[in-house]
Amino acid sequence: MRHAGLGPLRPQQRVQYYRWWKKYLLLKRTGWITFFLFFVFQLLRLSDKPLPALAGAAGFVCLFMFLVSGVWWAFLDCPRCGQTFRAWYQGEADYFGDECENCGLTGRDLSSIPKPRK
Image (cartoon, rainbow, N blue to C red; front, side):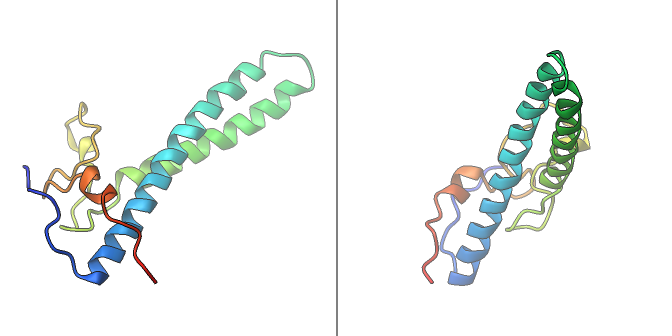
C-alpha cells in the first residue's frame, strides 16, 4: 500500500515521529553492529590464550544484545497507524524494508522530518 508522503503534521506529531524514527534507527544500528562484533569475537576465539575466554564472554554479550535489539526493532508499532511497522515475521520472510505494511509510511518519509526545535 502506498501513500504520498506524510502530509501536514501538527508539532506534536512531528516530535513523536522524529523520536520514533531515532529509536528505530538506534535499534536497527545496534542490531547490525552487535551482529558484526559477535563474528569478530568468534574469530578472536581462535587466537592464543587468554583471549579466547574473554572473546567468548564478549561474543555472548553481543549475541544477547543482537537478539534483544532485533526483537524490539521488529515489534515496534508504527507511529501513524499503531500496527507493527515491520510485519515480515508474519509470513512474508522476504520483507526487510523500512515501510509500514499497513499504512505505507516509509523510512524515507520519516527520515525527512527535520529535528524539532525546542
